Structure formats: structure tokens, C-alpha cells
Length: 120
Image 1 (cartoon, rainbow, N blue to C red):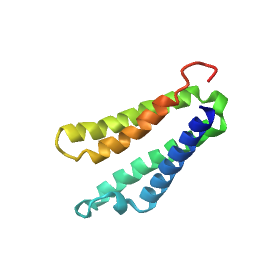
Image 2: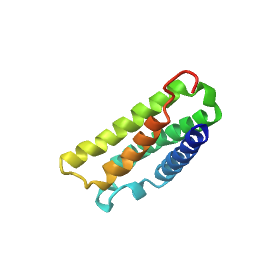
Image 3: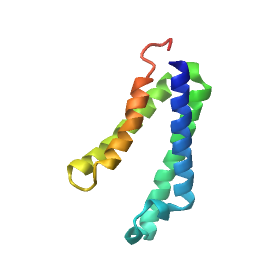
């Protein structure tokens, strides 16, 4: 399980860091053409900075495996809330099922690799 957990940390860290950096420097990629107003770009950049941080926290868990427990649980809370936002949009009819399903994958992976005991 250690190798699988480290793989999860590496892959999710790389995805979060790459997405954050791209959205930070090119926020229009994350926005529909009709929403490229300055405030929308600003909000995308704020979220991008959070994703850079999240990616770095995944890499911290990878490199500090024995001390990862509190950070892992914080990451699980973050991805659960993030997926929940997408599920609420889907239930309200503001999105298709693709976004909530994609955003549920990290929840499942992080829950599966959670350090349930202090020794894992």
C-alpha cells in the first residue's frame, strides 16, 4: 500500500501543481469565452494559487511519509468539499455529470490511502 499511496501523492500533486500554474498564468483557459472579465480572471488566479499549495502539500506527504497523517486528512477534507461543490452544481442542474464524477476520483483515492492508524 505504501507504493500505491506514494503514487497517488505524486500523481495528484503533479496534476494540482500543473493545473494551478497553468490557471495562474493563463486564467482564460479555465473560463468560458463570455466570462473573461477582470474579476473572473482574478478569482481563477486565486483558486489557482490554492491549487499550487495543494499540489505542494501532496508532494510534502510524498517526501514526509511517516508524518503525513494530519496533512493527508486536511487534503481529504479539501477534495471532499471541492467534489461536493461540483455535485451541488450537478444536482441544481448547472452542470453535467462529468465534473462531479471526475472530482470524486481524488476523494476515493485519498480515502483509500488514508492513514487509519498512526503506524501506516
